[in-house]
Length: 148
Ligand SMILES: CC(C)(COP(=O)(O)OP(=O)(O)OC[C@H]1O[C@@H](n2cnc3c(N)ncnc32)[C@H](O)[C@@H]1OP(=O)(O)O)[C@@H](O)C(=O)NCCC(=O)NCCS
Image: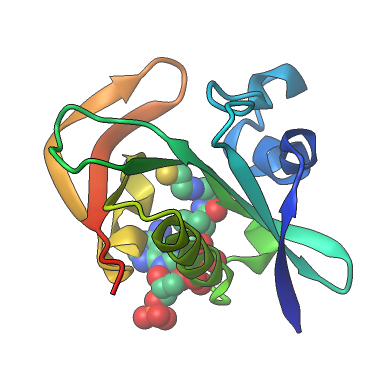
């Protein structure tokens, strides 16, 4: 049985490092936005083991007109636990959190390899792909969320 709870920014590094920054020093796991007032980090646990993480914070992207926007960062599930539905659980939990904050839209820079996953979760791409230095090709994805 898994459960999702709020964790500290530093705790995310256990998953971020092997999944998102494996070739880089551990310090590279600190992301811009990690310590904003609106930032929350969630971890998915199974028997006390942290297997997946996601971070989100309020951030306005000028591509969108929605008033209250949240950005997702650092979405990652440990390799040996991928494709078990944990990513979906983390996304659903984050959407609920954003609805509770009366947000209207969630957006993020998606890695090319993860586009299919987010599309399954109901997200759409916006604009053209772009390169994030030392990380690879990304594209903006988003979902409008309603508070009803
Ligand atoms: C992308 C990621 C977060 C998905 O998490 P996950 O736990 O493996 O995904 P889930 O098991 O919840 O998958 C939900 C659905 O999406 C599908 N899916 C998962 N990863 C996919 C991918 N990369 N491409 C297409 N579909 C994918 C699953 O097959 C499943 O479909 P189903 O419901 O029809 O069976 C995870 O694979 C990961 O950490 N990848 C490496 C890091 C990364 O790319 N992070 C995103 C950065 S933007």
